Image (tube, rainbow over all chains, first blue to last red; front, side):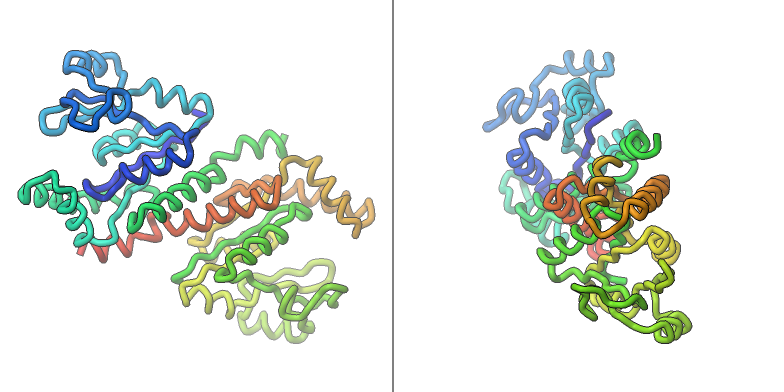
Length: 200
Length: 200
């Protein structure tokens, strides 16, 4: 694996998708993984852009072939990260971002300990609640359920390498840029160069 | 300690002083520590700017009072990092950079394990030799001695957190910016915030 793998996770409503998309718009050389799902496309969805839309048989066949880095079921639908494009970019020396749920992140961690785990964090629970309410796509009960789920994710934050504060999208993108650039300098990723160039 | 302590080291001639000075010119809120020394001021030196020039009695008294974070003797002269201004900036929440020799860096590491250790690296040994020769302030024998000493420092590089490639000063400053900004996001430095805000 020549490129670096960044796994971005965090509670629902924190804005992790917005931050990742804004990052790759500025840095198109970084590959933002596109998930596969069995859920039906909604308005605004485009196959191969927001998701790869496949049916349950295709998804199950993918699982059987070990074609997903991680997968999970939410609300009766499958979601998964196709392995092949991710590995292809990494092998070619490119960086890859996975924006996934924390269960998937913990699964990736057990297989790719050298990956970098980033937990996107709201400034406060009150602000997270405001953002969930502002989306206007969920009922008050759904919002409450998401908020309770969000609360349950914070104890897991400590297992991540970085906390990415999303108080402001532009500031959060700058923090993500710093993390991705700093990780290139991280000594364990440079030992091979030092050995080859200076300790031969 | 509320701010972060960055210890920048690397072989003689690699340009670590140039990179650190360029960084704090762009980021004057970060304190670049000024060493104390017993050596005589040279052309271009200014007391309290390039060094604090003190006599040997003052230096020995400082050592006795534990006034230095680290100190060493080079070519018969004492060099040391005054503790008080560093601790003052850190306690006030500011970041501090120490640009010191690797012996001093390893000493700091044993006392401040939470500090961040950055090893400045040339693109190649050949380029380091060219830079040492280009300084035009040393004899060929001195250059050879410095190059041998430089070579002896590379095995220690692995004890640092980051490798900062200095192929180009502007690029190296950008890498240092990324490291300093990313370290603010490093999870262990944010556990207290997460505990207080989300896990109370």
